[in-house]
Length: 574
Image 1 (cartoon, rainbow, N blue to C red):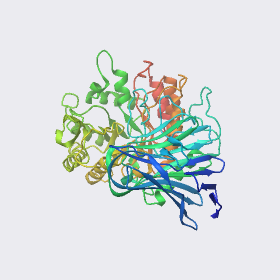
Image 2: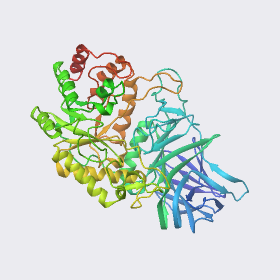
Image 3: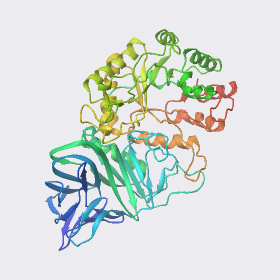
Image 4: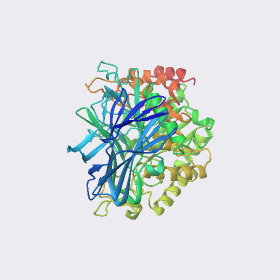
């Protein structure tokens, strides 16, 4: 890199970018892309962090890594410094503070301040882009949206309005900004325009992922990034935020690959799967959830149809038409209580014998597991609200971790199952008012829970398969297979989005974030039988085929015929 100094700026010319760092104002110009605000805020539960003076940047390191430190004075912290790190192919921005407090949230590339020249309020960066790529599925489906629309990535969400953005939980924490506009044409909801692109990602390993959500917040041509810690991260002396890594990319897929490579390079994510894949993991999956939904109605819920007799009936029909799944997922809800491993005796009168019978037929069985469920757990092993009521299981509690490890062992050795399908990781117990045994929180706490389950599963059965919907590179060591999760419905204008297009997008995200992991292609819900058939035909190209439907499509009631099933068997090479 080449660094120059003038009266009012530093100049940085690197291999892939040119940057001008102002010596009189807290900002830097990224050639071709806009202005980066070097204001940051670390808000606490008691006070809002507002910079009241910024000092000139100090170049503290030169060579192939130029580091600028920008001290900022605030009434909240004993000291605060924004650090701008320039390397030949990327730029990183982070904030460090000194003091003791509970962190509420952090803003980077912008924040509240009173500038030395007089203006006050919230300051933001300006990125000259017309679109932003979002790596997590959302409803409405819009993979590339206008740059003026917000994006939220994290482990909180459900199907309610404004919350359906945690289908991947967590996704890779990376955004990509493009010069071309997002398409509004029919059938383009998953289209990714050509480059150039600018990737923005978070550099943090598991220990640094104690926030619940990473938000891109644009307003009137400006934007900042926000990390929501919810008051559960405590500082004792010096504390440094995750770094925002800014790097040009040819495509959003390259931006995701850059994100993974950056984490691996800094020792913050494994290079690949920590366990070898076993041959049986690649065999066709049957999951009963779609069949349960298609049979439901008349006051009977899908959960009531997770039944031993019905699974036998559905599997017999599939075999009659040439489909003999290698793996069977017994879905929601086979157990008497979500948080415990005992089967419901009315629906599954002898699950152990049933699984053993499937083993005799050469098949493996996975049990569906709902993450965070407090049902059937003692309150002291749960995250609780101020009234002491259980909200979620608490992995910070050693007693719960022991219970969870024992639960996994019971499912795999007691019942004889061969692995787990982990669902609902997006139902994180969010809230600054919530109480837990320990201090770990956010994405990091989810990893702690999955690590407990993963280790227990491998101790019980070394070839146990663990399926999650967590395609973040730092989760490579707690999952064997990434599930692409529920298919969504419409674009922002209410037009249907083809399920097969969503399959291709999600597979591309998973393949670039965790390139060594297998992919469970999922298959539910399907809008029509035509959608289902198109999806089924494409599945082998995008991972392990998974079949959810046996008799009918739940949304339309369209019948699935024997001819349809034989066609699927042909496509899947059965």
